[in-house]
Length: 191
Length: 95
Image 1 (cartoon, one colour):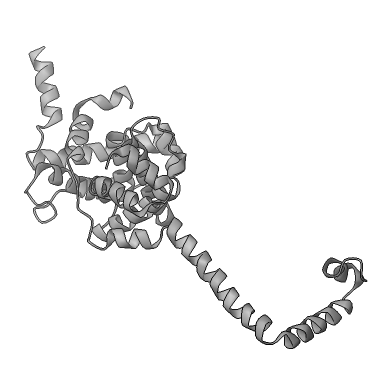
Image 2: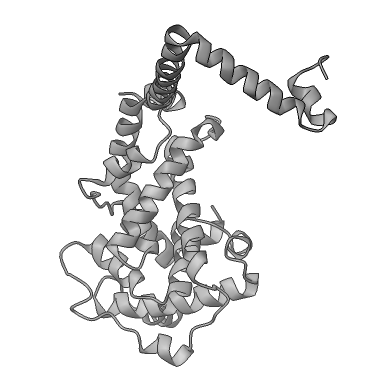
């Protein structure tokens, strides 16, 4: 089924079109939810709530930009709204606690690199994880993140910096990336 | 997307997570579908409501018109006992 047909069908609440849309995007969107969620079950709940919103608000999609982009935006906002119910994002994590976080063999199955990266992200404390997901992966600005999470822009920036440092350490330990600080020193030395 | 996103670890994270998909559980779609306002379902609910009302009202009117008339008179008398401002709405021009 083409995207146009799916869209037209969804606008008239046609179950076949809705199912086709779900089949096309659900796996990708569950991957997005999984990065925000605490568990697989939570991610599935986010996905379901998100798709119900997509189908009930599909008339708001104006054919501006890619449909997947709009779907992703609805899913991300659903994840944030669910997380906001249980968590104050202005709470800062104790730095010593955050620094002690590391990727253990048990928490990271070494099958696929993408999965390893996602599992590393998921070991971060919820505040760090959410800001990192929104800024580095979803491409929101710190101002937008501050508005979405009801926090200061400076909090978003500092949480991102800390999250990035912890994540870099984890990825270096897992040999997924080279140590960026060492690389930088090397570049300076070469100059 | 911000220009500052296009460097180092951010680019790597975007590239890696792009390929990260998880297949939802088998009953996931059914759970969503159950919570959706379906056009067909709305029509069938309306049809059920109309049929139920017809079945309830028709026999009373056709089989026992005396009972229906009596009920109507009782209701009419009851309305007359209400304050004029309210009863006017039910029996315009008669109170």
